[in-house]
Length: 255
Image 1 (tube, rainbow, N blue to C red):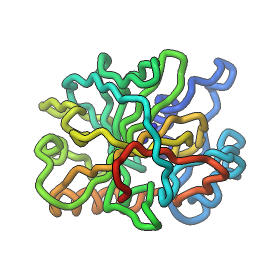
Image 2: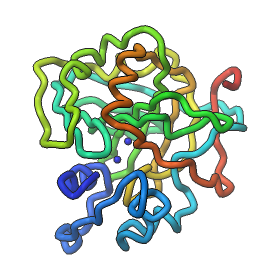
Image 3: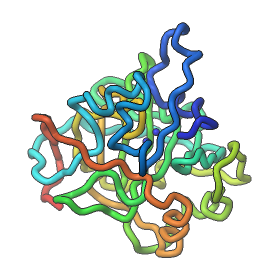
């Protein structure tokens, strides 16, 4: 399942389940990744954020003892998209054109956007990856599925190079980049994964999100990682309690 300052409130609605019309006039509270409005306080900043502190299926989590399972196949139907990118004060987010989707267990989820976190939000035996990419999908009835891809240092990521060249360094309105990108190039060729039921990792921390964290990372160059770190600083929510949930994996070996 990626999710903002007041200026970016519409982006949060874009990620969340659409509220009733009577609730759409509500302006969510400002939140941050540190200090008095940081993750430890999200649940008390706004009644709409209560799930952030009271939920029992929150994300991200530490993945340390996944259970081996034969999991339903992921079917990715990704096409090229134009690049509309925004620095919304919390992440770099790219809106995805209609027509690309993930199909799993008979449900089709449309890819609506992808964004980045540094360091990774999910940890593995307590260890972070340098960064994590979230591809956010939504079904016709509003359910969310997020593919998480770990980003490790290595070869330059050619698919992301056009975005990196014009990545907005400061918060502001969305801008269009004269280039195209295909999400198929952002996920590893091997589709083994860790799967669990979780939540959005940003307020309002909506639960019921299907998480698919790829076991195989993709690479960014050190220069690409440095640029991402410089712009985002630390936009990673601390890991949350598993609370009895099971993490399943179809990987042939653990990390």
